[in-house]
Length: 106
Image (cartoon, rainbow, N blue to C red; front, side, top):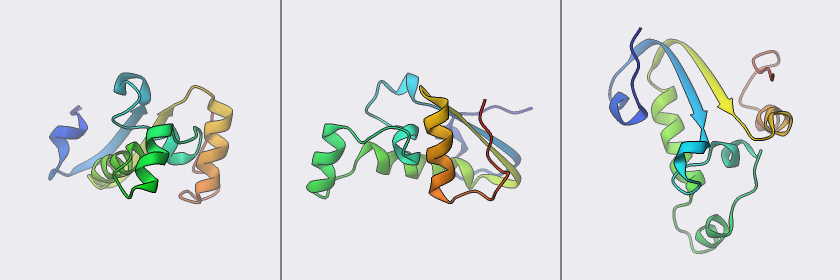
C-alpha cells in the first residue's frame, strides 16, 4: 500500500485511490470539503470573494478534489469526515455526482 498527500500525487497515477476529505486540519480557510458538497454554507470571506470574482476556499477545494480523484486508474473511494454526517450525506446526494447506491453514511 502506498500513501501520499495531495501535494505529492500531482502527475502520478494509481490503480486504486482513496481520498480522505477532512476539513479539521485545514484551519477553516485553505480548503473546505463540506462547503463544496453543500453540507456547510460558504463563509463571509467566500461570499465576499465570490462577489469580487476572487478565488474562494470552495474553488481551491474543487481543484484539490480534481487532482486527487483524477489519479485513479481503476477505482476511487471518497471518504468525507463531516461535523453533521446526516446533512453531509444529503448534500452529497443532492450534487448529482454519484449514482444511486454509490453513497452511504454512517
